Amino acid sequence: MTITTTADVSRRAFLGGALGLAGTLAFAGCGSGSSSPAGRFTAMYEGSGASETIDPGTGTMFIDEARIKHIYDGLFEIDSRMRAIPRLAENAEPDPSGTVWRLRLREADWHDGGPLTADDVMFTLSRILGRQTEAQPFVAATTLSAIDLPNSRTLDARTVELRLREPSFDLPTQLASYGTRIVKAGTRDFTRPNGTGPFRFRSFTPGREFVADRNPDHWDGSPRIDALRVLSTGAEARLAAIRGRQADFVDNLSPAAQRTLRGDDGVTVHSTPNSGILYFAMKTQRAPFASADVRRAMMAMIDREELVRVALQGSGETSDDVFGRGYQYYADDLPAHTHDPDRAKALLRAAGADDLAFELFVAPVAGGFVEAAHLVARQARAIGVDVKVTIGSKDTYYTEALTKGDMTMGQSGPLAIPYHFGSRLISSAPKNFTQWSDPRFDQLYAAAQRERSVDARTRIYHDMHEILHDRGGFIFWATTPWLTAYRSGVRNAPHGVPNAHDWARFPEVIA
Image 1 (tube, rainbow, N blue to C red):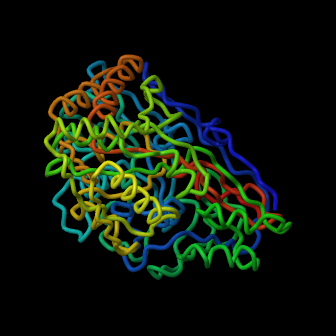
Image 2: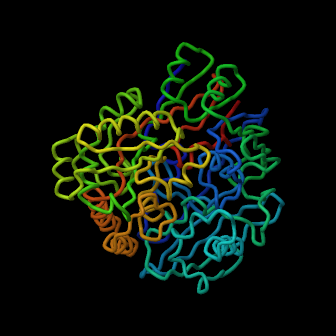
Image 3: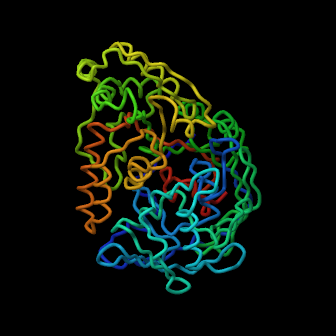
C-alpha cells in the first residue's frame, strides 16, 4: 500500500485562486488537457438508500454531491481553503453599496446542445427562492434569501444583474453553496438531468448506481475517461471492492480499513488531513440545553482526548468547538476547551441542573459514532449526569436529527464559514441542528455581509465565533483525516478536501 497526503490547496484550486472583492473580478477557464479518454471508471461512496437524489437543488449527502457535480456546474465553487473560485461566472462585479452585482457568464453549452444563458441563471434562482413544492426543501433558499429576485434581471444573453435586499460583498461564497448549481430554464423533471457539466447522464438508481458518459464539449475540457460509474455502498463493500480490484476509487475509509490495506501493493491510500469535522449538537431551544451554563458544562465535561484515542482509534485530532480550522475566517486564537469535570459540576449546580438527564440520539453513519456516544455517557456518569443513548437508522439519521434527541452527533466536511453560519446557525437556517436562535448573532451575520473589506468581515466573523465558543450549541470535538483509496496505476485521482471543488471530481483522472 502506498500512502499519500494532500496539502491545503489543491492544484486546480491554486490555479483558480481566491476571490478578492476590491473591484471587477475576471477569470479564465483552464482546460483538462488532450489525453485520449479510455474506459469506464468506477467510484464507490457511502450510500444513503432511497433518499439519494440527482436534483442539484436538494442533494446534500456526499454521494449526492459526487454525482451532481459531474452533471452540473455552478456559478462559483469552493477551493480547498473554502474560498470562492469561478466556474460558470466569468466575472463578477459589485456596485459600491454591495446591493447590486453584475455577473458575466462564460460561454458554455447544455448537454442537449443549447447555450447557457442568463435566463438559466434566473430560472435556477427562482426555483430555489420560490414556493417550496418538492418533498425536500431547496437547501440554498436561506443562504440566498438576500437576493431580491423580482428586482433582479438579465441585461443580455450572458449578463445577469442581481439586486440584494441587504448589502453583501460575500455573495460569490453564497453562490458556491450546496444547492446552487445552474439548471436549464424550464426544467421540471430531474430524473434525466440536462446539465453543463463534464459528464452526460445515462442512468441512475437511488441507493445503487449512477452512470454518466464523457462530455467531449465541456467548456473546461473533455474528461479523460469515457464513462463514470458511481456506486452506493457500505463501508465493508468499499473495502472489499478496492481489495478485489472491482473499484478504481473508494471514498471515506475507516482507520481499520487503512490498516487492512497496509501491504497491498495494488492500492494507494490517500489521507487528507483536517477533513472530517465531528460534533455533538445540543438543541438550545428546549430543556436542558436552553441554559447556557448547561451547554458550557457539556463543553467542559467531554473528554475529547479519550474520544479520539478510543472511539477514533487515534485517527484524528482534538478540536476546540470552533468550526473551520485552517479555512478563511477561522478564529485561531480562541483557547481550546479542556476536560474539566469539576468545572462542569460547578456549572450544573449554578444552572440548578445537578440531576441532569438527557437523550443522546446517534446512528452508525460514520466510524466511531456509536462508540463515542457510549463513551460520552460514561464520562457523564462520572459527574452524576444520566445520558440515554438512542441509536437510529443511518439512512434517515440526518433528517431525524433535526427534531429527535436532546443531543445528537454529526460529521461535516469542510464548509465555507459564511455558509456554515448561514445554513446552520442563523435563526432561519434550514439545517439548524442546534435550533440556535440568537438576535445578536443574526445581526453580526448581516453586518459581515455588508463589509467590503475582507479584514473587517474577518473581525465580525471572529465575534460570531466567540459567541459560539462561549455558549453555542455545537461541540466540535475532533477533526479527522479523510481516507480514500484508489487502484494503483490510476493517475490524477482527486485529493481535495470534502465539499471542495476538487473533491470527488473525476474529469482529469486517467485510468
